[in-house]
Length: 297
Image (cartoon, rainbow, N blue to C red; front, side, top):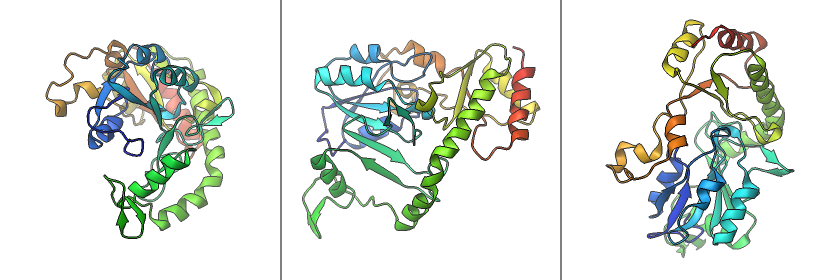
């Protein structure tokens, strides 16, 4: 956001079901989160809801490819470009996802990746990267990640910090990168198998082929607590990503009480994450599938 020249008084459009990470970055940059609703099938930013936001306050959009599903970038870009808004892709969960031959991170003005150890491409510690095609923006981002320097010991860009990727983590990532596509294929195969299992009252996130790398396998249930208890009784772990929508987080002290996001608010009460990763063996996958088959709301 700082590389794009955003700051106080600038609104950044985003969704409210993605863990508050984009909002945290916006506040750190002095910007204001502006929330739009999500599509109930993809659980991602709804371009129609984005189009209803005021162009007078918004200057940029953060598009989160949540759970590994690449958002409808053509539609979102159509809205953003018509308003003159910059577009930032949040690719933290979408390493390797592609749509129409374009990978996550290659659509917007800038994109951010996380290399936290649990990600599809993860290091052995914290790390991340910013990517983009515009040389001016990338030069500014490189400067900001190292004190705002434009030459050694010469700080030019305000808002700089020490945020370099450790070389050891980079070496680990380079060693793991060649396996990414194969591991993503395994994730897709597991999620596809789950979808094909007879189930009652469960709704999976939309599957869109190579556009989804299934960082998380998420479904919805109107009886979430009972479903999680059922899974636990079958020895299957589960989690909720994410239980509290951004605009209802206590940290805001009611700042967004007037914001209404009906789809987001309903989905946050229903989502459940079930095991799905490339290191699961077939027996473990079948154990999860058996629990899905046995569920009755």
